[in-house]
Image: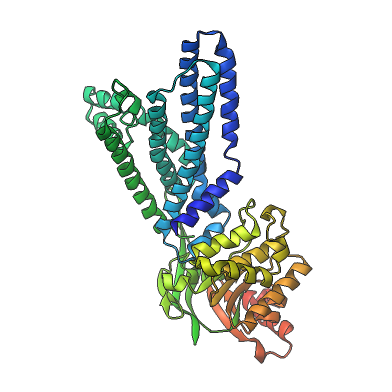
Length: 254
Length: 249
């Protein structure tokens, strides 16, 4: 039953024009290529790569949390949730199907944006494929695996789109400063602040840990055990968050 | 054979605010039995407890006390879900899907096997008179057509019991006539139908029995075969039950 729900989510998002994000991405990237065309080819390629990766991450993050937060809330508002919850369907199947559907959409979106970036780099400069770009995109996808589950569960906790989006945004920001959070919690002496910062450090996902491109060794080979650890971290964190989300959803009345 | 049974069911809604909890009665000490093949109307004013009763039978709400059964299966249960079809009041279907796509989707999540689903969709589209518009997106549909899509999704897995909540609310006279004809066709197929409404004139045209709900309590069950002038008599009974004596006078 998970597959039809995921398929419906993909269809719903495609027809809901989620790929307009791709157009926005193309516009930004072409603009960037024009603005930085006066730089030397190597510098231009580096700048375009950086802007491209930042845009892929930002646009995918925005599309991901908006889609995830609205998955269940919109269906409650439209009353179509009644039609699904009265079917011979487990509630966890519904949650997992919706979650996977959003991930599929984001994956396609990222692939398309990456293709645009590669094409642009090829045309704009004498750029050669490098592993850093690949691992940077993989890192973005790992982060999305986690944040989409957080946004989905937040929507079930807060039952408010705005609050759930704000919460996910906060988690996203804090997750990028996990190491700083650790240092800070070591340095502060006030017990309450120490406990608070430590709790944040352990509860919020550590996105710095997922940064695969920093773990790339010369000559551009990614050690398998690092990929396995990062994958394991993302999946375990996601599984726990979705488990909590499902627990809340299974107790929900409509 | 009993299709539906409600046994001493009470549901209290609790709305939690920061410092206090507000309670309101959904239904109280409700007992009801509906036979297989019967068309049963739940009649009541807005907020009387009609939708609550239906939601309790579907497992969308959990009772505070008592139990609900569908063909002997205690709700909520997968076995009970297999046997029911539901159309809520004015659902907003995803507008970018076509009629066929949406019915196919609900068929899949209801566990209708691939090999028979296509055939089943054909049959249902024919029944609700949507064959010609099967590839149109729902955004192009009128309210009456959307209601027919709603019925189609409720029928795709061939359930024995159908729940229709305020089926004709907001429909024009043509839509109302279509819905009535559809219910009568489903009756011929021996489906058990439970429909809620506050429009007495429509209820008497399709129902065998009517339960009048007043402030969460089942005030009376009327067998329509026992009434001579169905509409007028039922209206009198209904008004006596829902209006305070002094207002009625």
